Length: 156
Image (cartoon, rainbow, N blue to C red; front, side, top):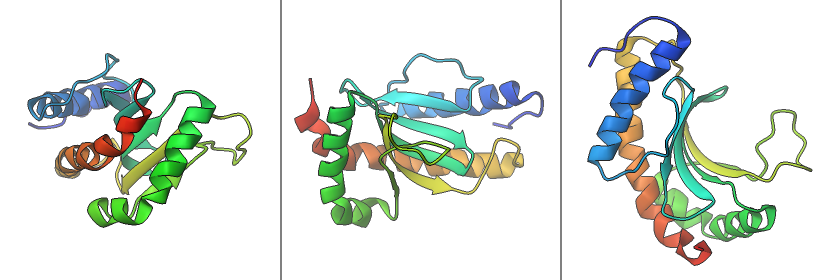
């Protein structure tokens, strides 16, 4: 599939339509959302946790997001951080962000994220976007395989 030029929203739509189709074929269930945003979320099977892919300010991400209560997020984050060495042996170096705030403050944000990062943006060439798509389609199932069993104890 060729990624089309156009408005930023159209570029996101083109990218995410292909990605969601391919992710669904690999057993992922997308969380309903609009394709013209810079991210898409997928269910983990647990309330408050999701897998996401996004075009962020720092690059292209595949992530595990924890967005439950502040206490549950921190408990899960700390438990996963305790397994960090084993997790990173499976997934490579990850960015561990307990409080994802652009301004550096950590006092009132409850979300936690663990993500793999790759250089890239929606304005990249069609070949680079195809490369990002393929990279994320390899990473997302690996995130599920590694994080899924570790998250089970935080289920509803």
